[in-house]
Image 1: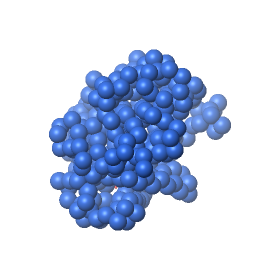
Image 2: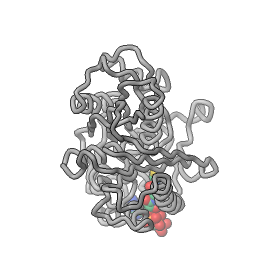
Image 3: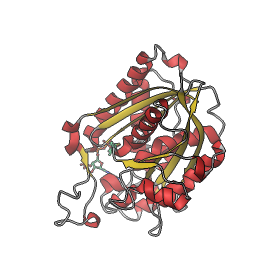
Image 4: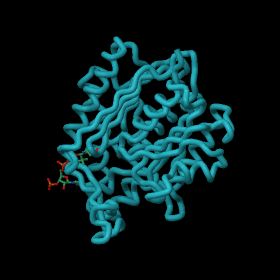
Length: 322
Ligand code: COA
């Protein structure tokens, strides 16, 4: 049986860092409020001349070096993002061109903060079907371009970044299961009010802001992240004792803690990066994965449970042997 397996990882965070103290200068907030309500201390923010594809390229180069693969080896690019360079061509083709990757399937998908989980789940299916030998999978955002810097409800939460993974076929166990889900009835709790077929002429993107009912999102996020972790374990006849690391979407430390508590996962086994990265949407899970690998906590052969939740709502999990 062929599995898909992670051959290498990489991450890139824009150099510019905005601390909570920087936020205090812009809106009526405090470092203490942000830390106690979200756990966030700072976040990286792209400069005006950086595009999402640039973040992708920087993360991808590191992941490819880690896996020992060249641009010629890549035959699938899947990118989860809500903040592509352009509406079309899709950002995966821009990354392909910038990296000199030969013609291959290249597409992006927009499932908000679940984007990377959807992307890696899709690539897993391509590999197991025998269609792909080397997939470049990325979660990337310059989500701060959608932020109203004067809206204190959202401007303290988000940050930019990209995380990349090389996924390859293997006879050794890699990805064991993927579970994806969505429920569009929650659209009004978290959305961006401008799209191509809706409001584009009336309100330009720069004039709009992320709309979020924070409290409601919080509650559904905790319940969903807890239940999808359990679903992944049940599907594999496993318990939490079998999992070395939980790598959840990094939206808010209190959401991560509450979801972990619900399923009985000790926080020592949860990778946490929200403090330094903020909510980087589709980039958050691959960023946290790479942080855990590079700092030596995550080791080859260990079992990882990745999970995410985002606007839509969308959600998903990936259980894998690293
Ligand atoms: N600084 C200071 N005060 C702030 C603030 C800020 N940055 N943002 C909001 N407030 C105020 C609110 O206006 C409110 O004031 P009021 O009571 O006078 O109306 C007060 O703080 C309490 O707001 P509340 O919404 O009850 O706080 P909370 O404990 O729920 O925390 C969030 C707010 C947004 C941090 C929290 O709800 C959250 O993280 N939700 C999930 C968001 C998320 O993860 N979205 C992405 C999902 S992928």
